[in-house]
Length: 291
Image 1 (tube, rainbow, N blue to C red):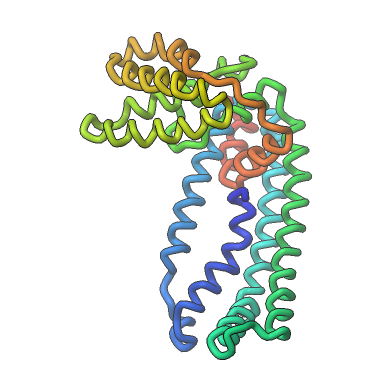
Image 2: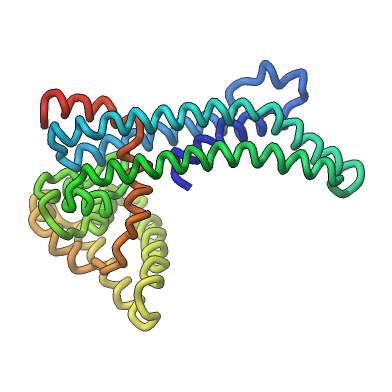
C-alpha cells in the first residue's frame, strides 16, 4: 500500500489505537504516540525520496509547470480524504470498544456489534477508495508529461535518502537501460564500517538470495550469489577513483534482467513520489529558473 494511501488510515487508526490504549479520562490529554512520531519520520523520509526522484528526472521548465497543478490536486485530494477519515476516529473508537467488550463479556461478537463495526469500516474504506481513484487518474496525467527515457528513470528509481551518483547523473535520462540498483548496492557496502561489514554482508547476501530465487532456477542461485559476494568485497577494496571507473562494470557483472515494472507499478511510483507535495518547491524552482 503506497505511503500516500497509508496516511489516510493513519488519521483514524493511530488516533483510535492511542485512545484504546488509555482510559477515556486520560485520552484527551494523551501525548503524541510513538506510532505517530514514527509516521512523521516516515513521511520526512518519503519527502526526501520525492525530491531525489524529481532531481533525477532533469525536467524541463514546461514539464515542471505541467506537473505543479497535478501535485496540488493530489495534495488537495489527500487532504480532503484525511480530514474526512479523521472525522471517523471517534466512531471507530466506539465500534472497537464494543467489539472488545463483547469478546471479554461473552467470548463472541454480537451481530449488532459486528454490523456497527462493518458500517464504520466501510465509511473509512469509501473515503480511501475515492481518494485512490482520484490519485490514480492524476498519476496517469503525470506519467503522460514524462518522456520514455524519464519513465525509465522512474522504473529504476531506488528510494533512498542519499542517492547513488548514477541516480542523479543527467546522462541516465538519455539512457534506455542501467544498473542503478546494483550500483546502489555496491555504494552502500562501501559505506559500511569495517567492524560491521561481516554482519552486514551476511544480511545483505541473504536478501539477495531471496531475490535471486524469484528470478533464477535453483541450480543457478548459488553461483550468482557468489558473484555478488565477490563484487561487494572487491568494491570495498577499491579506492574512490578506481571505483568510479569500474563501478559500471562491476554492477553489470551482477545484474539480473528482471521483468520490467508494469504500467500500474510505474503509476504507483509516480503517485507516491512525483505527486508527493514535498516535490512542489523543487518543481516551482525548475519551472521558474530551469535546471
